[in-house]
Amino acid sequence: SDGVLTGRLAGPVVDGITKRHVLEEELASLAVSAGHAIAIGDGANDLHMVKAAGLGVAYHAKPALAEKADARIRHGDLTVLERALSAA
Image (cartoon, rainbow, N blue to C red; front, top):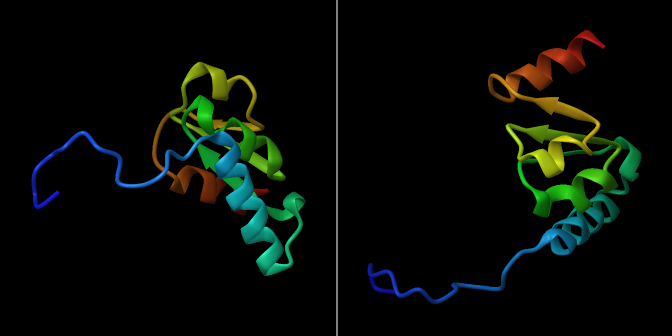
């Protein structure tokens, strides 16, 4: 607040269920099925969103997400994913 850290939340806490709902809402607004979506996350609170997408990617992720995602990026940046999808 006014350039000072107060320790108060600026808005609601975004949890894994919220992230999945936002993904689903965006897909509905674009008339795109979940099977055509890519969701990328790095932690356990991204799991619901990553599992809801057609391709769920763990990006430099914590073990809880990395074990359950469809794909993992452990080294490099997101251009690694772009190159992999272009080659497929």
